[in-house]
Amino acid sequence: MKYQKLNRFSDSEFKRLVAVPRPVFSEMVEVLKDAESLKKKSGRPYTLAIEDQLLLTLNYLQNYNTQLELVAN
Image (cartoon, rainbow, N blue to C red; front, side, top):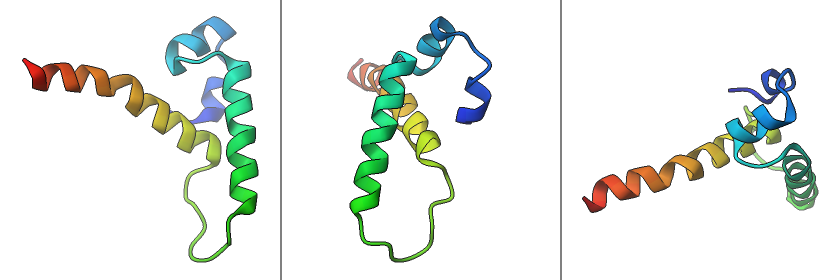
């Protein structure tokens, strides 16, 4: 899911989908953008926007517990 498509959802739906409130997500994006600006720019540019990278990471972390529980059983 792309970040641009999430703009149409309400704040409560956004939190259900992403697992963090919209203001927290925006703050996380700002921290990532600040960290990205400090990095040395070499190589190919990213394919995904920072917002989409964060969504992908949060989605993985949200589902990782389920996978861990399945392995434990």
